[in-house]
Length: 380
Image 1 (cartoon, rainbow, N blue to C red):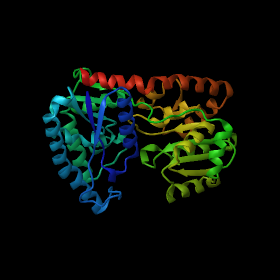
Image 2: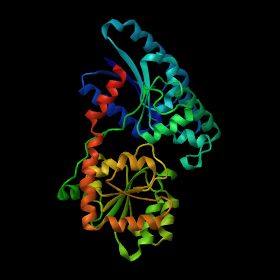
Image 3: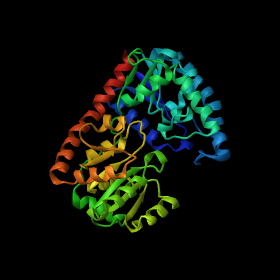
Image 4: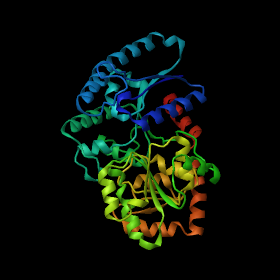
């Protein structure tokens, strides 16, 4: 078997999709599957430039939607010509936002991973998706959905994502046997780092000692970062630690918001930490707080659990699915509910139990189990 993985355009700088592609490649290779990666390249847009806005976005569109389908079609013809060398050759699109490539791939020999339908739902006017779309964004998302409907082989990273996709596509759950839920596996190694070692990494970034809560992720509105400020404000004198945001840098409006709450001196930002620093943060925090309004999967939740962090997360279906019984859940629109959940969490007995359940929960996302499900789907 040979699987050709179709990755994302480098100019889009989608870190999570890069990690998914890399993990999928490595896990397939470890199971003795031949793997090749092909992805759009920069022809019209400048190399090594982010192409998510302005003129560069449109030049990137030419590279992705006009040039690359031609290159991909040539690749398909080459593989068909050389089919005697490998018994089965399949193409897998690693990101549903590239569903339009299905049109140039063999119908019965290609598939796609759907990570979420939040942008699609946002384009269709679903307020609960918390993903607003521009006029051109609405056209793009409708194009993506139109092609997703035609996928013969499809994996969704959560049951909640599959349910929403099935409704959008008019497909009843279970009616398409080649549409399967295969959860994301860990895309890197996460472990409980020793206190002394983690302190060494935190000292390297001048991170202060003492208790802190942690959020990991982007600054997108649906990530609901500001809830941590409201939660700490609601806690008042019951907890006096710091708040750490790892991922996208904090913007000026967020900093002003922290100042209005009188806690700006307690807010710490760690922009895009390297992997060891991230593990040190997970391993050292008082609790990991994940208050998203919407998620397709939620990698940081299981990363935190794997590092021995107690988790407090939004009571949305996807995070319940991923976190299981190993987290405390609260309404993302109610900071006071998060505050009470946090007080409950930091009680020694409760925290110890949550951490133990977290380690057990992480076993569900071990790469070898999940990659075998992926290979089985194509062998079928």
